[in-house]
Amino acid sequence: MSLKSRLFALAVGSAAVAIAVSAAPALAAPLDSVFGSAGSSGSGSAGSSDLLDAGSSALGSSGDKTEHYGKLGRDNAPNGVRSINVWVYAPNTQPISPGVYPRNSQLGVRYNSTIDAGPVVDGDECAMQIRLSGPKVPKKAQLFSTQDCTSVKPYTLRAPGSYSISVTDTISGASNAITFDVQ
Image (cartoon, rainbow, N blue to C red):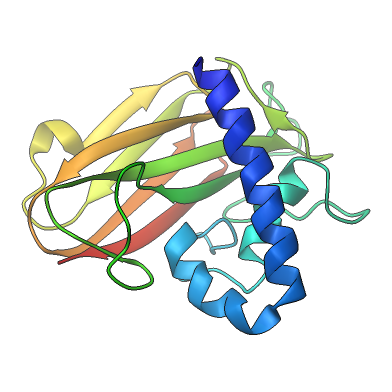
């Protein structure tokens, strides 16, 4: 299955989860840390209870007004990126508790970039910098650069502790971050 197909399937799944969460708002807060921080502030703090809806709003399926999270990009950016949504990427790992994952797991960030009107930018017109910080992060893994506006970046995290991954488009200035713990 191609990366675009997987991302589309993941986006459809996120929209379905958003609908389920909106039917049960009491569950929204615990799910924030499980799914990352699409609604986080530029400082990487925990997301809002509208977290899952952020992913679906980026796909244009949520309400009339698009919501953007994190540090917004410039209005006149050449690539049109206005915001970046981020989620914890844990393809084969179940969390121990919300926002806490077992060590020696493949974990990372899944992100998409959106334009002002809301649709996802799925191309290579970005200049993304993905920064990983946490305990015992090798220098080589601390910064990764790519042109992919929408993608995933996995790591195998062996050391317990708190981790942060920020995604910044240096063309538009948009950025966002996730935090999670490894035990």
